[in-house]
Every structure is written in structure tokens, then in C-alpha cells.
Image (tube, rainbow, N blue to C red; front, top):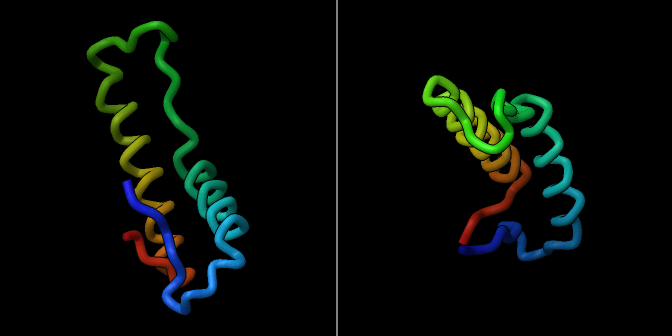
Length: 71
């Protein structure tokens, strides 16, 4: 696993930017909760994966737009 670092080399706002991007991603992909909280049914698997992949994509796009690279 790597870390996010700003292209300018100044990471003072990283925690604020990370929090913002996490909130943005959660607002667009809040996460699917399966009918049975202990185990998802086969018809729910894709819903869960879509939420996870979408949330990750929104978060990464936000961080890249704010000037960060993942290394």
C-alpha cells in the first residue's frame, strides 16, 4: 500500500483534502447494505462491488484533481 503526496511537495492540507474526498465519495456511493447483514445473497454481490468500486474511483479522482499522486 502506498501514500498520497501532493505534487508541490507540501502536504499540509492532506488530512483535510482526504476527508473532503472521502465525504464526496460516500455521498455519491454510500454503500449497499445486504438484506442479511451476516452474508450477502448472490443477487447482492454485484451491488456491493459496484458501490465499493465507485466509491474508490470518486475518491481517487478527487485526490488527483486536488493535486495529489499515489505512490
